[in-house]
Length: 112
Image (cartoon, rainbow, N blue to C red; front, side):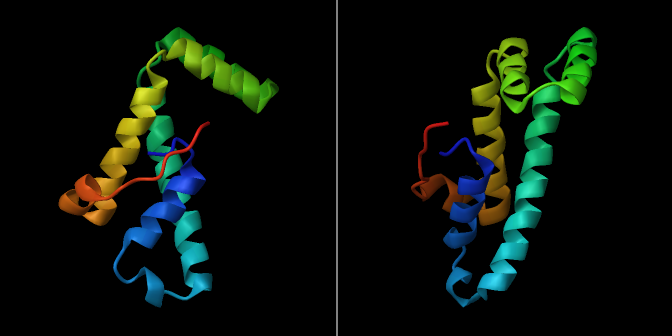
């Protein structure tokens, strides 16, 4: 299962039986909407794992630092962050595709 939201959302849309019938412009709108929803779900899950002190530090970091430093902070503050992201993606696939389809479909893999 990919850890990047863009690849995952593109894959998940294509798994729907009606995907071939959806106009590309509509798919683009769907992708943006699903990416936003999924990003929010991942962020919520990661933030829930941080202490109040880490949340304060994270908030300051968001205002001042690069994306790489933010990612590093998350990895240090939430050592099992990759597992959390994978779990959120799996739950999202179950919700979007239905449990039996999400469990039996081959998901693409990617390196982050």
